[in-house]
Amino acid sequence: MIEAIMETESLARSLREHSLVKGLSDGHVDFLSGCTKNIRIPAGRFVFREGAAADELYLVRSGKIALEVHDGARGAVILETIGGDDALGWAAINPPYRWSIDARAIEPTLLFAINGTCLRQKLDADHTFGYAFTRRLMNEIHERLERARLQALDVYRV
Image 1 (spheres, rainbow, N blue to C red):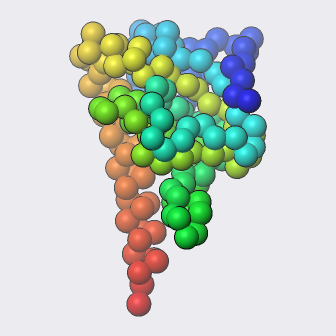
Image 2: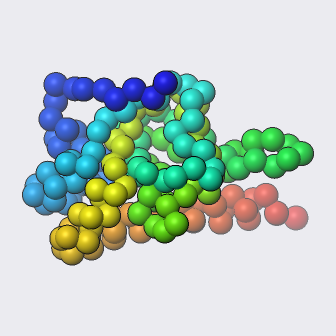
């Protein structure tokens, strides 16, 4: 069961510590925290499944998540394992808002879950915030693609 958790510390204060949010203005972090909740995912549980509606963007606070695809012959194939300070689920802000992979917690994991509809509305409402947040997200996407490229080079090395 995915469980929403309450903490005594301020959500905005803990959100500020994540690399995707670091450097945003206090006002922008407060703006973003209005869309955000803390959740805990037990080991073995799926954060999301391929084909389902992509309704949240996730920022990993702690734990590890396997990003998987399924091959009929081999079953689940782990493409990458991500952990603390990574982000996943940018399909929540990119049409058609559907997951293209599975994400499964491989150890107990704490996440910030940012509601996709709320986030899209905030990105549209405040273009300064939208630019700053999207720029940070693009850095995350670039790093993920670079890791995938290096992994592919290693796999196909002759």
